[in-house]
Length: 354
Image (cartoon, rainbow, N blue to C red):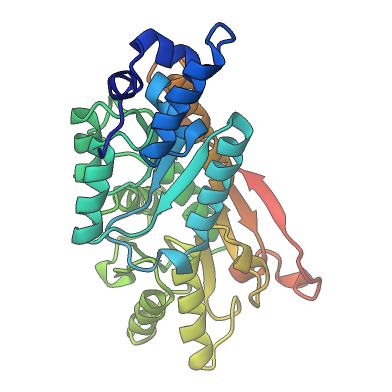
């Protein structure tokens, strides 16, 4: 018997459904011999008594599924997802739930996941995805599975999500470079399917236009979030007749790759080229020079998304909440703003973004 129900237990133990419920809830009114008979049936059919019993009564597993991007094959190399997962796990522990994480789904894993979702193995889902036209939200809605999303699709107005204002964050980063005197500022973008990328590109364009600077398509490189694509983008820029004097990278891993390419050409950061990243992963403080970047509160975002989901599961909040977190421009040595203090290891200045 693959799925043991309360009716199955009642039939096999020769008791009523209400008696099974009282046994599973440890009600004192049940006679010991009846209690033993009911538990004997549950154990005989291979269920872990306490967890299975609670699930049979409440239809709750206290499991939260955490789904990361389907298209990203290098999740374990990206510290952003580790920070998000830590926030999810901490909130689950605090609220008495267990987080189960699924990394980078292929076709076979996706079929298994859909089967698990249909079988209601999870009480709810935290979906970490800003991909446009991601099929998972549509499936979750059709299956009536509660979920919250970290990152959001503009078409998902009815979704509960947490996110940051990518446009404003990128605008502030590029505006900072302009304030330092740079006029040829390049950008290394991320995967085209990620809806945050056109937002960050929009912020880049806005800053240039406000400063009266031209939009040069030669100063735009595509990327895939990884070190290698940042390095390739920077190599392209360095081959131009008029290379950029500054680069805004849409994440820190690509920024590190860009720095690698600059050093391979015998150039210096920030004296020859300034760099600004996005994310503020831990490595940004230990690379030389320390990377100026946009800080996203990834752990807090994971925690808040999970809290919103659990509140909904427990009936504490029936509304669809949408939370936009503030980002911070963390000014370190790679942009040149602190050039005179470059010998002071770890020096940084934090400028909040409204």
